Amino acid sequence: MNPEIKAALRGKLLAMADDDLLLGHRNSEWTGHAPILEEDIAFANIALDEIGHAKLWYEILADLEGEDRETYPDRLVFHRLTSAWRSAQITELDKGDFAFTIVRQYLCDTAELARLEGLRTSSYTPVAEVANKIIAEEHYHHRHTRAWVRRLGLGTEESHERMERALHNLWPFTAQLFAPVPDEALLVEAGIVPDPQAVKEAWEGPVRAWLAECNLPAPEGLPPVNIGREIHTEHLVTLLGEMQSVARLVPEGVW
Amino acid sequence: MSTETTPPTDDAQAPTLDQVWQALGEVADPEIPVVSLVELGVVRDVTIEGEGVTVKMTPTFSGCPAMHVMREDVEKRLRELGFTEIDVQMVLSPPWSTDMIAPEAREKLRGFGIAPPPRIDGGDMITLIEVATCPHCGSKDAKMQNAFGPTLCRTIWTCNSCTQPFEQFKPI
Image (cartoon, rainbow over all chains, first blue to last red; front, side):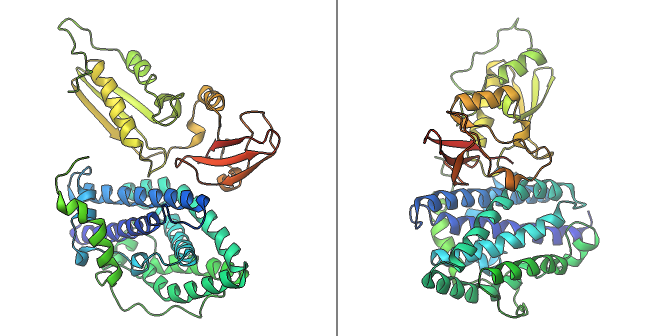
């Protein structure tokens, strides 16, 4: 693989892995705290899935880098400084209320499904294999969050108001999910990833339509993205501070 | 090497491929102990070369926390057979599907109180998740309580006929 394509692919894999890992971590924060037991169970499951997906992306990144796929994912997750993460800001934000969690997960599930559809036929076999593995699990997330968007969007005055507020706050962050990583055009040209603009178009229409059906019309347009994935919110700093604390205290710890 | 391992004696014959498959057929799923990893379709391939053995396994759900236990159990069983060089590889393609569960294992699941997954056979997985047959009384009149359950691979139901709760293996 030529070094420029390899560097771009490294950035793309890290971006996809980091997004899944942080979403999984945020979802895991509902364990023991969800509004009802069923959702406690559901979000613990979704969290596990997302962290499992992150692990698969980190493992093929390890293979690409010539690193050990057993230890490299842990190193990246537990010993990486904030500035080295390549997460989209939407995945970093605090979990908020249940409406915020549902809207974020719905927006991210739909974006991921649109991307995975394109990745299933990736010319880089490991990417195609991972995409084909995880897409079925994402369909189950989507089924779940989609139903909750309707239930809360058309629910009580309060649930609708909370959903509207969550959507208003989250919508501007979605654009970054479709912004190309550095040199992503090379990956598109090589057939490794789908064109991010096409992914965005495949995402936006159905999502707008569903939100409108749930009495939650999305704001007009998407704001331009003028920040890269190396710029983070303060939320990531506190998340990593907590998530990495044990691993940093006992770097070689085994339990 | 773990303490449970029986070291091979000098005159021990290397196990045959059939013996390895049979031994792995006794390694139970850590969360559903009535079915084996071979019946589940998690063990894909075995090759023997001298004193070494290579086993290919595939994950069920990608976040399944029991995967590393499955892997360790397989490695342990292979050591007990006397292999000294053990290579367990995880492969993703083709992705594991509940359609790969052996027919006899589906019956064992039912006997254990878990409704076997509906067969997908190229159909729509997302609508199939809405269908279940009560493993206790056989009624099809059941209501899903949660598409997520105590493990990644299960959904939670109640039967409207016998009123019992049950779990179903999630079709994927």
